[in-house]
Amino acid sequence: MFFQTFSKKQFEERPKTDLCEQLQFIVNSILNYELPTHYSANHILFTANIRLSELKELASNHRKNINLNTSIGTFHKNAYELLSKKANQLDLIIESYIIIHKETDRNNLNHRLRLIDDKIIALYNELIEFNNQTFLPQLVEQFWQAFKDDLMPILAELRT
Image 1 (spheres, rainbow, N blue to C red):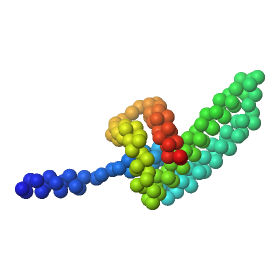
Image 2 (cartoon, one colour):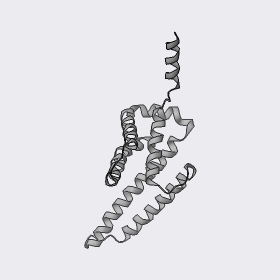
Image 3 (cartoon, one colour):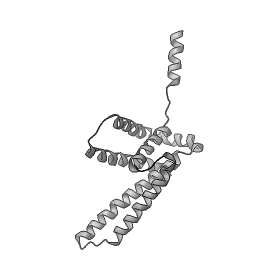
Image 4 (spheres, rainbow, N blue to C red):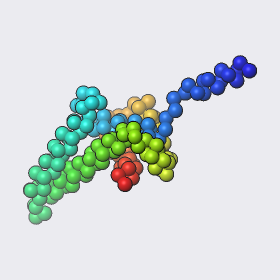
């Protein structure tokens, strides 16, 4: 009898993470990686919006110099495409951060996330494994890019 009670209490005290909490952890981690200069969680959206405006401004500057007849013009085209992609990704991450942190819609959001729970759990486990291991600096950037590529379709589903 004592063992049954003891094991039941242990099971109840384990932290339960639902899909929304896992996605919050994922989005917070990606924002912390993208914005290493923010000082606290209160300023993360402010810093993210500043970075987003910087990316959009850089993209518009490169767009002005696109000329497909020259090599430097092609460089500006490639830079514009890269910066536009990064800006769109950051914009989606910011919107998702806001959606995920609304406590009033948490049950509705968890219900919607059940359709893609296997993808979220896989990304969550990958992120936990990444945090527990040591990688070469060259591989860290590749990991985060691949991670964002897998995360973007999930975050896009939150918009609808």
